[in-house]
Length: 72
Image 1 (cartoon, one colour):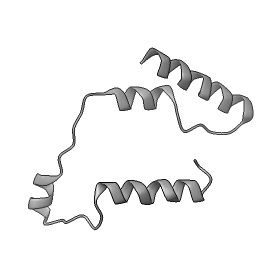
Image 2: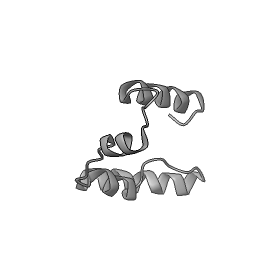
Image 3: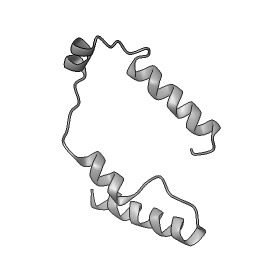
């Protein structure tokens, strides 16, 4: 994790120097490194909600959108 934090700090500095917001920050590294799990089954049963797309398709669509928007 120290390497990721250093890389994130460098990315933040580059963003500051260029005036462009970065998408990779020390806060994001800390958030992603946490040991947490989300389970939507109970909410799905209680609310009777069914996802329209699965995780893999949702991630693929999101990445495509980010690329088209110039964010990746």
